[in-house]
Amino acid sequence: RASPRDFYAEAIIVPFIIFLAALHIWGRRKNRRKANVWAVVHAPVLEREFSYVGIDGVKGRAGGSSKPEEIVEAASGDEAAEGLLKEKMAQEYITYATGRQNVAFLDVKLKLYKRYNPLTLFLEMAFGFLFESIKTPKEYMEATAYAFDGREKDLVPVKSKAELDTKDSRFKGLPSSGYDACVWAVVHKEQMKALRDERYDVSLTATKDHKNLPPWASVMSESAEVTEALLTKKLVEVVEKAGDAFEYLIITDQPDDKPSK
Image 1 (tube, helix red, strand yellow):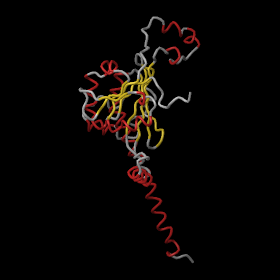
Image 2 (spheres, one colour):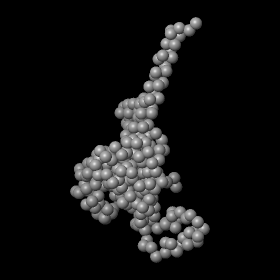
Image 3 (tube, one colour):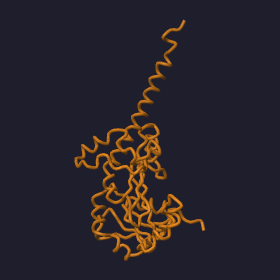
Image 4 (cartoon, one colour):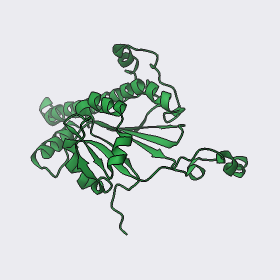
């Protein structure tokens, strides 16, 4: 005959499994909500710059609200950013925009903490703190815009044979989207060493402080002329306003990784 003593192990294991499952669900929902808030808040900005925004080209759900608390409330549901975002992993979300002159498309990646797995998150943070060679987890947004650079015929998709036949004529007479090759960046000084180690393109540049930038930011450029042309007053204001949330802005025609040949 079974007695309560026979189920001591189950009495410990089952609640622990339920706790882990609940923590996992909470972590995934928390990440989804943070990603939704970001998407709904920034969708109107992207829609002003691009004609097609989001994975399905859906307009922002709370773009008409100007009050932060209303925007956050509108984005709290799991379906608030449906069509704007795609969940690649539980800690990574992506979105997309296109339909802007001279820009082929924009890829946006949101990287969040692994809230659904606190043990892994704790270990990654601990090892990142103890060992310089291991990156400490962080939350960030990375946006990469790809320029046409005169390659519209190669990059613009065609949906039918008729469009394919008239492809050359569609771009005839349009202003050239080509630009002079260069590598130029504005970088937070705390990120400079890591960027030089990780990216081949910025390793080709020289670093120099600029009088218009805040003391914690610097320019990495191949040419002073390029800096004077690209470092506009509006860009400086954006960098200053972003503060420590800003890591880098890079304009490049070179690959991230060093070519093998």
